[in-house]
Image: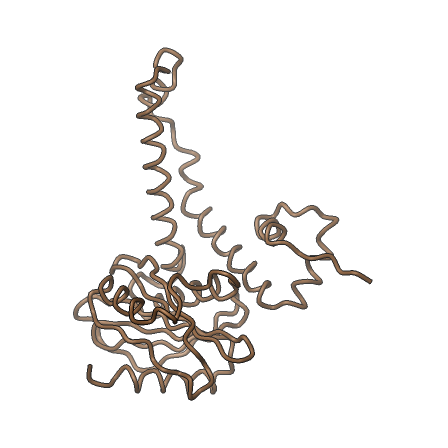
Length: 264
């Protein structure tokens, strides 16, 4: 019997609640057999919930009279059209930027921005979003590690160095720059073992004066039981995320900490 391939569009349709009912059984079976895809769908659903909580109230607001006047046929000339398109583009960028920060911050009901738990949640969401990617899991690959380190160090304003985890079976595959939640951009380094298991190290600039925290652990149930070890050391917050047993992930976290603690 031939099994029909499940597309990315179908997974998004399920997360958005618009999947045709006749496809539901096949998709559910696929998710039971592919926990990584199930975690992605759960993450998308959480993002949708947070977006609705953030922007649904805007739908009930009264349209400003100036916009109603501008939309009238008399105002529909070339100059107005250009200004309207520019304004629309600005609004889209503003909403996208705000939504991205909100989602990575944790959204409504999540820990306050800048808290250690917010660091862990932000890292978990970023892990769930990017690790399933096959063709573009990172922006800059490990073959350009020198450039990657220089770029991310410059953007975060501090010297970064991805830990060497090959003795533990994980090789660096690259990294990317992510939006932060108000303290500036964030760096994400991604690693992979011989079985295709991926882990990520999330590095965020922390506010001055924040107290250091020892190792803490959380398990994100809504992201496929994703485990996260996180800590704050000086000006930087770190979070190591992977779908690994706690003991194994803790061993890797200690190895990461030991390397990061070396004088630069």
